Image (tube, rainbow over all chains, first blue to last red; front, top):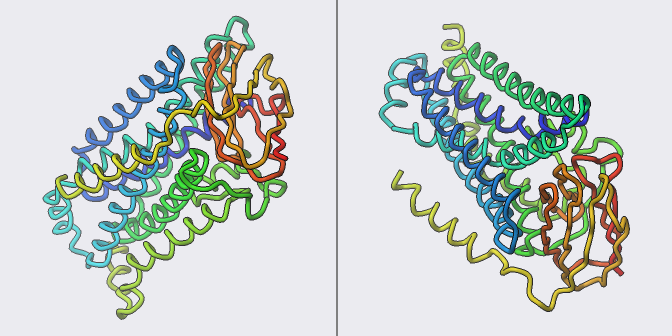
Length: 282
Length: 113
């Protein structure tokens, strides 16, 4: 039962994290009434997950053998692009904020980025959603005894716990000033996207698009990425117990290139820190 | 939206173009069964350097996820279903895999030599 709880918690954590971030983003930019964009994106992600779960459970054949893997890899890289774009936008605006929060809010609204946060919510939910659906479905098929139903409850509790974590992130994010929130999220999203990027590379390796190679090292004895802590670090930072050279270099290349593009300018110019602090104290 | 449409389309097309075709007839098919949350056989011997296809049949009612961190493969197999997983050519060595949903019992390895 504990294992069941951990499995769904792990699968749903990333989705909760992304939903928490985009809801907070809308809240911080004064666009609360646009929450529906995220909700609709998340709901569509859930619907797509269920559709995929049903397809995998009822059909078989070459399309089902390969389709989910190709879609899965596509969703990963789509998420990387969306997150990078979003982080870049936030970073650019974090630098510009000098306490005139209102003006920035107007700009945020006028730039019509709502469809993008909706799409981020969609990819976040859809990425591991189908697996969670099939897993829970299998548990229900097995649930003929009290212990079986206990597993179903544990599985659902895992999803709820992940949702609660997303809520905690949302509340935590609300306390930060807009400038600080943008900076913190940019860094967080950068690591998250780097981890996703390296996951995507791993998928392409398993699909035979990129060459397979032996892991560079193995730290699973120290911290397995299927343990609770390991899987949180995997979701947040892209931790891998056994990364391949390609995954590792993809991760580093993403961090260095995108990190430099986003923060390179900030290092060169005199620090805007006092202004940021002024807005933080509100 | 328009600005993103082009790169997204390109990405999708690239994904489709890069997606390997369904297993060629030449690839050896190796059966692997999941029953009572265990793999049978628990050890699979394959030739190094030759791609192959794992034909995984889940005889249990519950779903299982064939997962191999070594092979970067994660594949969910619904209860009572059979799924083919193409495995690229491997260097000689041992590659562990588990059933993620029943990790305590569902363990196995592929030995390429």
